[in-house]
Structure formats: C-alpha cells, structure tokens
Image (cartoon, rainbow, N blue to C red; front, side):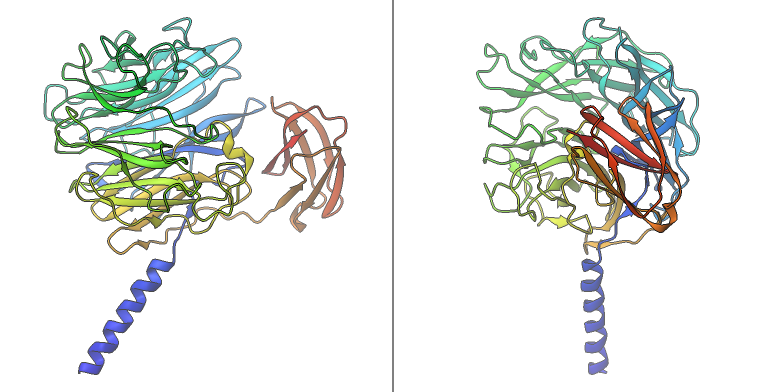
Length: 527
C-alpha cells in the first residue's frame, strides 16, 4: 500500500513538472503580415466568455489598410470564433487603438480610431455587442478629429465603464490625447456618455488647477479606471516646475462623472535616460470590489535599464507607495522590459504581464530577442511572486516591433486562470498569440489552433540593396506574385518560376514594400 502511494505521488509530481515545462501559445490572428496591440475583455456575467480585438492589415477598397478585428470564445479560450472586422467610415481610412469594456450586465463596448491623415479626417467610434462579442451594432462617433481643431484629439483612446452600484453605474468614459504629429504643448482629454455611447459630453481636459501637464510632453496619455464606489480615475504625466521640480505622474479622480476632479501625486523622479525604441505605455488598474485598492504600472529606467514597476495605493489614491520592481532578473543587467499590462481577479490578487529580454544575448532594444513573462501579488502590489514565462520560445528580434502599433499587450485574470494576448514575430510576421495559464501551478493549458499555414516565403537580405533573394515553398512555385509600395500601390507583377530566385530592386525607391503571393504577404525594406 505504501509503495503504491509513493508511486502515485511520484507520478503526480512528474505530471506537474511536465505540465509546467510545456508552455503553449496559440496564434489567434493568423494575419497576413501585421497584427498589433491586442485587447482582451472578460464578461463579468460569464467568465468563460472572452473577446480579443486587435489591429490587423486587411485588403479594403483596393488598399491594404489596418482594420480592427475581433474573435470571441465561450469556453475560456479553448476554441475561438472566426474573425470579424469593424467598419471604416471613409475612403482611405485606417483603424487603430482598440479598447473594450463589459458592463456588469454583460453588454460589451468596443472603442477604436478610424481616420485618415492629410487631409486629417475621422474620429473615435464606439460599437456595442449584446451577444458577448459575436456581433456588433453600427458604431457611433464619440470624438471628431476637429473637436479641438488644432490638436486633433483622437490618439490612444482608452474606454472604461462604471460597474459600481452607485448612481454612476453604466457611465462610459473615453480618454484621449492629441495625434502623434502634433507638437507640444499638449493636454489630455475625456468625454462621458450616459446612454450606452450613443451621445457624448463636450470635450474637456483632465489636467487642471495645480496639476497641469505643462508645455513639454508630446503624448500626455491619461490611463483611466473606474472604482467600485463610482469614481472615474486617471493617471497622467506632468512637468511643470512650479508644481513639482521633478517630472511627475498625477492621479485624478471624480465622483460626479467628470464634472470636477481632485488630484494627488503618484510618483515624481528625475528623468532617467532610456532607449527611445522601448514601448513605455503605462496602466492604472482598480480592484473590482474594493475602492481603496489601485495600482499604477509602468516601465521605469531608474536602474539604468527599463524595469517594470508597480506603485500601489490602499486608500483610494490618496497616498501611493514607493515604486516596487516587479521583474526579478539581475538589477542593472542591461536587459530591458516593456509593454506592461495587468489585472485583478475576483479575490483581489494581481497579475502583471510584460515583454522581457533577460534571455537575450543582446542588451537594450535593437537586435534583442524577447520573451513574455508574468508575476502575481496577493497583497496589492507590496510583494510579487517569482517571474514565470508566458511565451513558449525566445523570439528573434524583428525591426517591425520598433514601429507604431506594437505598444501594448493585454490580459485578464479570473480566479486562478490568467489569459494573456500579445503580438510577436516568431512566424516572420507580427501576429497575436494567446496563452491560458493556471497560476497556482504555472501550468499552460493547450487550446485549439485556429488556422495552420502551409505556405512559406523567405526574403533576404532585409533591408535590401539592389537584389532581393526570394525562396518559396513548393505550393507557391508557378504562382503570380505582386509587389506593393507602402501606399498600397502595385508596382510589379510576375510569376514564380523556381523555389529560389532573385528580384532586381535597383530601381525601387527607399521605403517599405510588401510582396504578395496568394494570401501570403511578406514585408521588406529598401535602403
């Protein structure tokens, strides 16, 4: 009996160890070349209903343009629906910067930019889904490009919904900032809707009083959250020496739907030099049922390389802790972390996720391979667990991650299950990957692979000079291929005669190009 018991224990231990070693990631976008900045939302009335949304390239109106795409699962991420796309609202428009929020009754909102630059036009739109993300109604406009005519206030819209039991329940908020091509001085903006996003308040600024942004910050993003007592809260950057001699992050909060704000200081420090290629987005997270608990997470370079820090509050944002370093690799080792996201679960535990280069042989951003990691906290960010990997492989650097549209990942945390989405380039494209992890055992759950891709195309060198070498799999030999420039204009059309051949690119202007064969597309750069 004792021998049988020992054997059973050994088998269980081996099973757990084996489970821990088998990390599974699922490509849920399978895009043709670029899928970026995913957002993941979980239905509070059914924690098996998740919705993923992201930016993905799509052929529309004869041009390859960015559209917002969504997939939905009703079994916790084990299987996913086919992808749907949100509409464009003008010729030549592209979409960007999706965010989502479920209200406490299961109504899902999706917010995104649809715009064109030069001539500037478009705005921010909100769509609703009454069936857990399977279908969307006609989007309504929340912000217009000319709501603040000189500042084009439509960049990086974050949307949150009030799920309190107060009079503010169901209120929607969107925060934005000026378009990226607008020079400072800049401010941040917000609007409020009390009718499910069909109509919105007049545009207004979040900063104010003795907590102004100042004249030097190009992109003063306000990271929003709503609390269980009905407050609308944000954190945003500032540098005004008469307010604080150091650059600071301020916390704003309003209990009357943004009519008035109060402010406190989250963090102030002398600026530390950091790699400008890093994705330095930050997030404010509020506990689902305890209005006192909040955490602000961000990359920070005070130790000489970018670390992930958390600054928590246990009194509703009145006071804030000192920064807590979340990544547990060696301090000041030259390995940079960025692209942070986080979530509370129902019990108030925290999960924080990020992109990590500790396993790369190269320091900094450029040419550094990367993984994705997570850590948890059961004491509202005072201490964190040892770091664990989310990604199933070390991903080689690709220059596409230095470009716009790859600034954020996303996660949701329910009970003991962490679901995470991010963009990486392991396939030779920027695609969106999903991981489902049981946190208590660090066990990765295998989910259904949606689509497999049998075709391969390899291009080298990249960047290219006067000759581009192309190799394709057998299935693509004899098929036509086309070259498009960055505006979507077709500049060349030929047939593939061999598995490997050379294309003369000496007449190509410097810039980004796309090679298309069948449904496969590869990007390359001409010097």
